[in-house]
Image (cartoon, rainbow, N blue to C red):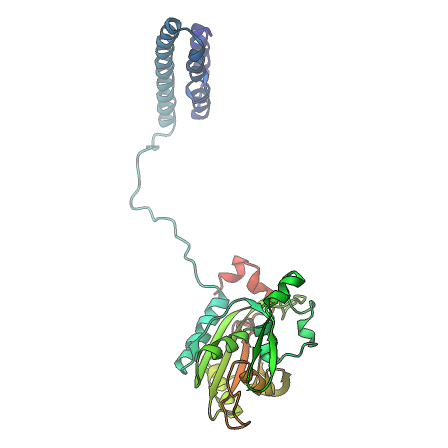
Length: 356
């Protein structure tokens, strides 16, 4: 490798440099990690010891000379730039100049609604309970008195996990109580409601009970302005010796008044849910005058208590009783913030989210 040729070529090229961009390119070409000087040092490994020592010294000298060429040219370019713009000083910092405004994050509207709803129920004496989103058929359907042939179990409404038939059979364990026997199915699914938390909590706690269970649920259905394949619910359960539907109505009316900070018109309609009897649906009037369903509720069905291990040997009417409800957090947000489409809550559009 001809070191003198590299030196002459570098001198010619550096004379043609007129700006900092060209100076940076020159540095990379000759003094960079993969530049001409680096290639010279890499080639030394193939030379004899004496030759390696001689050329190595020459290469070091050449490197210093090119560095001097570069530093001199670099200073010339900077000085020329400062003369063109006398007010330019690279090191000057104006400490009186306002800084850039830092964008502050904030909570998502669904989180705001969830937090406020939980806070209101906690002031009423309700405890927060949690359960898994990946559930078993037993807790999501069987223990909640949902019939085996109920349409909600179909693939059209439920996200089932794929499992081998032999695996499902091995997972089944027979559970007996004093009156009857039934099988506890462990087929896996994404929970379609937060109601399974009721069963899990009653299995490990003794009444009287007051709990709410906020969380995400999943349903295999088409999305539109009022429905989604995933959404948030807040489950409620109150169990005691003397609990009636009137207690539920009073608690929900108080909750809605505190949540919306005004008297919201509410109505109860007869409904059907396998896990409550009697059952009813609760509607609230939106600002546009239209009614919208926000929750389902009812008195807990005796079979649900029996599945959880309560009232198994007590005569009807003499054991624990209570009410349960499930309110859609998304729908509370729609009414509270006057949102027209539930899908806006999940699109991560900052133009929408920054309004909260």
